[in-house]
Length: 137
Ligand code: IDP
Ligand code: MG
Image (cartoon, rainbow, N blue to C red; front, side, top):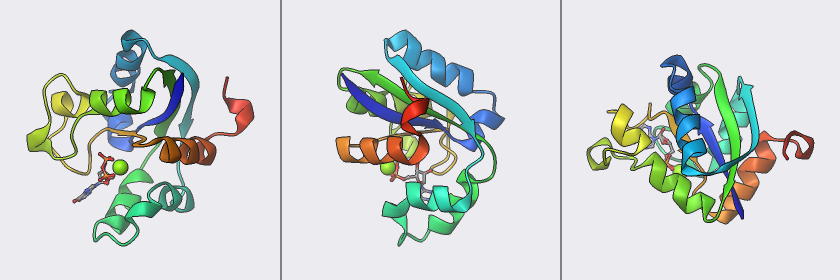
């Protein structure tokens, strides 16, 4: 079994889509290992998106992620990381396939509802960044 970090971004909470996003992971068959509502501060958001620090949209991205509460989660399944990414869908809205979370509910590149870890190393780092070991099953 593999673990992945999934986060409903502030736009997802604001749009009342947290339940729908959780439901998709539940009904797909993932096991819920950790879940909490968090108001991220800038330090947490900057660390989470550290790989994008040099990108022109970095400041705007940190503003967005700290603009409201997020639902931070850890889900477990076989190939959870790849499976989670396929359920989330593409970054570019015009590549977003219907049936994916982004493909069903978003038109924007930034306000795209959900984050999912993209590799085993990032999953491990993100889980450790957002959760204490005692907060996980
Ligand atoms: P991902 O979320 O599909 O892994 P990344 O390229 O890692 O996509 O980008 C991280 C996040 O940064 C995206 O989910 C999106 O919210 C934001 N983002 C990515 N590219 C842009 C951009 O060109 N303009 C504004 N925001 C962006
Ligand atoms: Mg990414």
